[in-house]
Image (cartoon, rainbow, N blue to C red; front, side, top):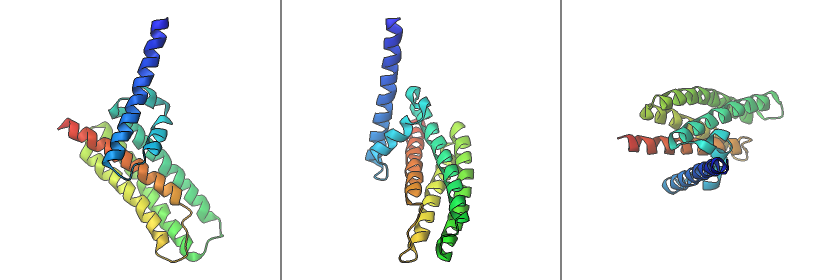
Length: 175
């Protein structure tokens, strides 16, 4: 029984080490990836405790899907709140469309990733990253307007960058 406990503990430590090493590598290769954000995000999914690099990539895509779905609902609630000026309300409407597209892109990215069509997954993940950037940039076009979505857009951007790093690492390793 002690051996089994030691083995599970060792396996969990190896999984934690994989998350730490993966996030360290991702952060070194992409200045848009914050190590702490990466490790915290991946560790939030219980499946990460026994994950391989391939599985960490899928976890990151699932996190994106959850994030963009939640953000879409959040935007919808903001739009229904009539406290916004017309410019901000238009930006929120634009972001609603962008995040609607991001949900579809996340689903497609999952499908392509699962099928190991990494180039196609890369295209979909890049689209999500661009959607978050475009949403945030829309608010910056008018002086004095503050985006109510900055943190959410930043999180979507970083999660997308993490998933893209996983795809690129696996794509490079599979050639």
